[in-house]
Image (cartoon, rainbow, N blue to C red; front, side, top):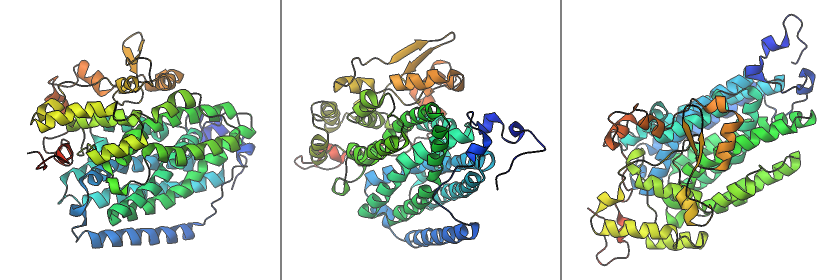
Length: 489
């Protein structure tokens, strides 16, 4: 279905802003090929079977008390997931549709058309299932609500996903969404989450995630042939830069969402891997193999920044999210009972002497009935690139950073703050793309948020008192193992 245009110019059909060819001739794009060959009737047949299975499981379990019996930490993990992922699945459909129209090869456009239908289904199913939980868990409404608010995590998610697919050209989307994000992160994550869900007894979520993952495995294949075409036509540097850019951005959001869930929210008896082990055995190994096979290099920040952050970054985020728990739509699980601390020390040697000391102070305040001392009185600095609060002091605490201070860059109109050299690099590669982004702190300091108080900011983030996060177990972890131990009240 490829043909040479005769009645219009190529740029009229595939404008560079939406279909950047990166200098590769049209005929060379026709060599694009992927392993999944499927007809539309076959596709529809398979998808109907998947939907029937998922909705049947959900219909049965909706009449049970399964959700009420789930561990509080696991509930937090799935509520965080729904809020961060459900609506972005719809947004991913925009990226797929752009490739379906502006992809440079007919086979690619056909594949992306299925991807568009996939992402539409993923958005629908991940808003439908939590909608059924509303009578039991009002915060499930954030599956639909989150991305329509100015909650700081939602701002960070929108920044990433807009950069990745709603404001991207087709070639960049194939490499950054389907290769970097889906093949490298979410496809593997969904496999792990489905297995964990079954272990904790959440059959409904396991069925949903497994159904989505089978779609991801197929349409994620669009990135590999796109990279191969670029490399075969002397554009390896373009492919490398696109991967380097999005791997770092994805890593920070992934650490925030998945790192906390794996190492702190999942019940201890059901943890198969630590987050670092999962990253090392699954994500890192896969990317190393693919970089070698394609002739690409690992990103320039791989050793000195990415691998170093595996030991501490998500631990710092967890401490921050728990402390600023009123600013999120789920109930963060501290996950630092005596047994859990033994596990954390085993998986991250030195944890007790670094992060553990911070939790010692928090635990003492909780036991003394001074929970007000565990809550924030102001807000942290936020990175102007990833839009995630800075946890640089945590990296300094464990000896991974030379200074607890962030990187600061003064421009003509304002001072920019970056959490790391890679975030600063991503911004400086395309400043006009990101200059208009305002972090939640930028909005606070510029007077957008009124009144300029904690309560004013929570209202700006659309978090009512009933929706603001609280400790998932009502501080039971602080009293575990103590004489007459029980939940704090």
